[in-house]
Image 1 (cartoon, rainbow, N blue to C red):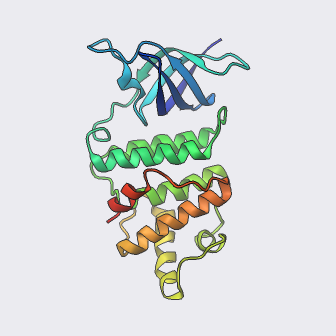
Image 2: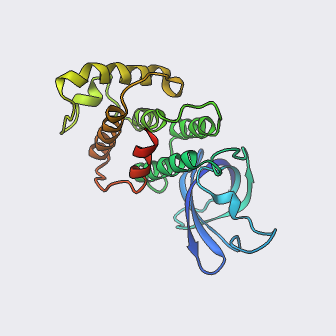
Length: 229
């Protein structure tokens, strides 16, 4: 059966000489894997640009029950990226986002609110005026809400964990920063020492791994920590 849906590309794997298996988080159908033939070709006929990380697509797909790999009938880019593929910092954050989402959801998982948040985040990341230093932190804080394990208060992000890395002299400033991030989200301009931001990033990733039972480290983390300088 053919169905229409919006989708955001997470990643793809090469398959054979010219094909790929692409993982797409769709709004209506959830996380799906699609086999796309003949896209890794040379010249103007190549369509591999459609399947770069965080590309936002309008899709017409075949959706068969109990089938593993599905097929795409039509794919069209909704919002061509202006900055993400050409700016190292934005490209690195995009890879961080796809890695975090990939570890948080499973095949077939459907969540329209999470999809809408991811779509909003992609658009913000692609804006010239966006503040990137806070971006990974806001992304983790907001994603916890849409996956249902965010605490009721900013303090909960610090105390509802196995490890608590912040000494008493850092807690007050960290809580103020968290509250600003939670209220102003990507618009936050709050200034805080770089080392404290990096410590909070590590802590929030630990917080997520405890709730998602996924302890392996992120490949993109060393670069993201440097970008928060």
